[in-house]
Length: 350
Image (cartoon, rainbow, N blue to C red):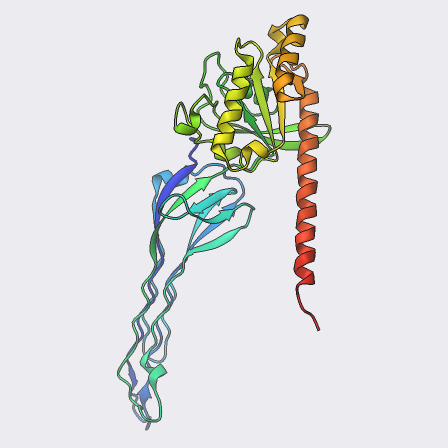
């Protein structure tokens, strides 16, 4: 299955059916009168976040979604049938953007989140609705309201606990393959990863989700390389894991390049808790490890030593990430409790 995280779709809700102009004419019934029924309502277009999807690939093959129109009313005060709704099933973490591609309308961040994108038109009134003491035989009815037609963008931001950052060939995919059942492509050349990968990582009987995105290069926020197209997938992460290639001859420059790019991207990425790791230590001797660690700690703070190939230091890194995730979850829970308490205090009760 191909990965698709941005697509443009065209939607239209159904128009309401027209009301009916009809009169009751039956033999042996002395009094007739208007009996035109109302039109049915048009179908609406909804978007719903469902479990089991992690890409928008379904919308590559179908971009137009039109709900059914309502049926017109009929005599004997019969109301027309309503049009069927259409539901766009999207992965959790999908944002609904306006036609400009920038204005976020909705954010479906949990399973079961459901919003109406286009409301169906109401059905028109039949002539029985216009009957009065001064107008006992109305010959008018309303037409149904037209449906809503609009263009929207769907943008997927994967839901993960940890996001991997690093230059191309820093060992991100190797780390994911070594710690989870995910099998991303691993090779000895840059830009091996061309689309994000998710893996479920476990440590001390606790599991969390890690997102591997394509590597960044200098000037990515300006569109160089693969650009910052995939950084949105780590916006929702509780923590970031920054892998620095220990075999690179420009260790400090590599670290500062990634830091500059996430600061330029914005969206709070630079403020997220971050674990810095000196990777590929299996290719270094003890003296080189100590020297490079001290050099990197001088600019980055605490640094972990790790090798995705030999799996040395993996458990310590995973435990550090788990602690950061737990701290973030606890902080968010407390903030939610405070917000709920303030809302309850502000509600008047007799």
